[in-house]
Image (cartoon, rainbow, N blue to C red; front, side):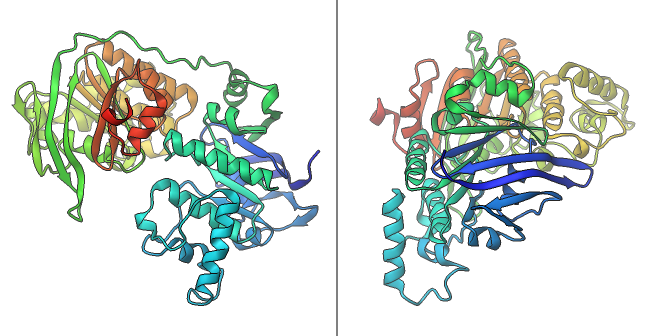
Length: 505
């Protein structure tokens, strides 16, 4: 047995009325990759935030290298060799990699510059991180920024590294490179914790897996003694079929055409660059790309919420250019949009389910008095159909619902309007496995009704299983559109990095 670096025993943590952790234990050993697996809200990040000194536990003991410790800040943790790389990077964009790495650690940026660069390069080479210390953060790819974050904690002497959802923003090639780096770190004596919910990646990189469910430790298993079905059962509490059905395509009639579409960001740089594609009835068109490739702007442009600089959006021969959502509705076009920001853009957080449904319906009513009865009936129908857990449809603000139930309300409302086109941006983000597969099923049912569906997703495996075609984006451009049945995961990864379809086929 290898040396125990960290022991956490009977850790409990409460936030208000929510028991995030209930007597959880964890053991980390030198040279091991330990995956922390669980659905959203299982307590994974809370447990690791305690180990990183961000939260303090209400109960429990932590030992690091055989010494009982009290961690009151991230500085306490890093001084004891524990560093955390967060899902959302904490880097200063206008500074160099070197300046970010030593910020808050060295007394001055201007002392021993050449020596610091050499030290950072030495660590970089040692672990296979390949970073230019003098490169500005804003000139780096997402994968490079992640490597700077890893270097930052290694530079401070960490030998226990916590990575929170490290592959969420990476291409398949970048993910493989990260796994090589992680293997290097464990060979050199580090313990690495990966917080994730991606079972295929857990089985590829882990030595040991701990599963949390609803704040409790369900079990710790060796990777070689388990499989994805067993892990799913531990995560959810029951066996779940992880296959995604892909019904045959429908009538395949072109319903929406995008021609030479260009849109600018607020800083006048191009968010979308000369996009050309079509959406067809009875088809799910997936959109793949690393975060920030223009997916959000594309969805909002199609929905009439983002200004177009050049080009056209044509719905069955009619231009939608310059039309806002209300004008699109008045044209007799039923278009549904499920945005990335559910409560900020999709629903009104302080309103109940009935009133949020009424927002989609009131313009259709005649006269001066708005009748709530149809919306109340529709709300009840959606709650029953999608199994939404709520005390009431007309007396309970949607902000008090769980993330999964909020998403079900939003998607249910949009689907009930019998749309011709559905635009969905990350509809399963933050949802548990059961809710995610329910949403895949709902989208497939819309496809079978000959609706044209646009699905923006971050899980490439889901895109390949669910969609009929996949549109790949990089830096606001379309690098290619491929048939999902015949698509190659690695080639899509190259296209996500900027290679065009013609270059990789």
